[in-house]
Length: 212
Ligand SMILES: C[S@@+](CC[C@H](N)C(=O)[O-])C[C@H]1O[C@@H](n2cnc3c(N)ncnc32)[C@H](O)[C@@H]1O
Image (cartoon, rainbow, N blue to C red):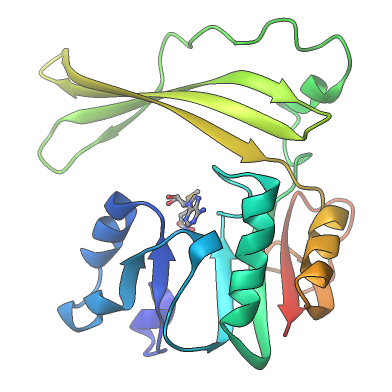
């Protein structure tokens, strides 16, 4: 959104039609056609780019095979010398959840549902509550499965509920470097979270900058 607002020529994709709809609502009508519903591993746009961003998406909802395909598709969509930027949260970003990696710490899965979730008010005054619990965690596969429940509250009552399972692959930095090299990228650097400086072991969020 900020890049588009500054006049950059931006196209955007998301696998979720709802997310694309929400993004369209924030754009002037003239730019709405620049958004499309696509999965990264099947990315097919009819042009190439100087820069591509994967923001908070890499590893979500897929498998390692699909994530490798996504890297290849991104590579194909870059101009020679163009850059792919992956904004990525490392598995050790938060203390919460870190003990799950240790043997003997996963007996309680699936976790019980929390009593209350996070709530957000919608424009028409309803509230959406999102409850999340870890259903499965496998350190050998480096995968986590989250169970998610969304409730629509109206005048103190739940009027609709939806449930989903979300599987994510957990990537440490060195695996992403290998995947990027495997997809053909070169000159990869890892920067700290929006600092522009080289990342250190104290950065829980990092940005990979990789060149075609
Ligand atoms: C944490 S949100 C980040 C949204 C947005 N990129 C941002 O930075 O605000 C993750 C997004 O990734 C999308 N997503 C998950 N897997 C995807 C895939 N394989 N291809 C494209 N989008 C995907 C989800 O639909 C969701 O909108």
